[in-house]
Image 1 (spheres, rainbow, N blue to C red):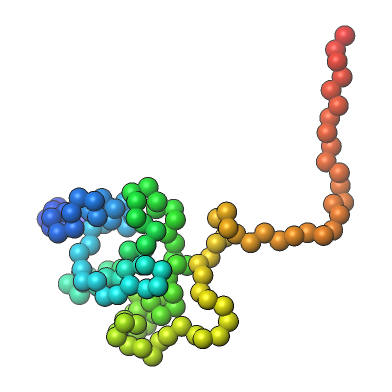
Image 2 (image 1 turned 120 degrees about the horizontal axis):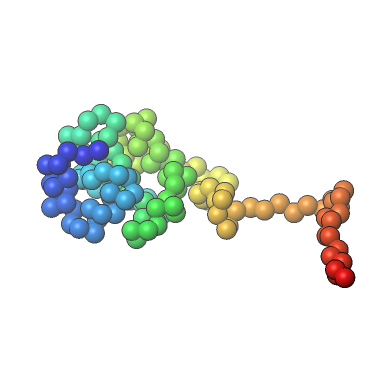
Length: 140
């Protein structure tokens, strides 16, 4: 929760639209420098004047509207930015090129579980039970 002066400062520096979006999505207003953007459009910020643990944060690309909070989740953060966000790396991937995405396998995608695009397996076995449908008799 923010103090009143911090909230006013956030409103004045962010503007009304971005201020309301931050309140809705992260429950706080934060002002910092843009460190970089990943290939998905997520923006990463840093403010060293914040208390420890609150200095680095992300603004998801899917948080474009006020009502789209459910679309953003942690699986949308690539590995190289995850390390920077959680202080495993001192320099962001835009500066330190040693942490890069692996060149093997498939391209990184977010976890789609619970969404309409989630993987659904196909079952080839026959069901052991038949569903019962009651037969309604006409009353006399």
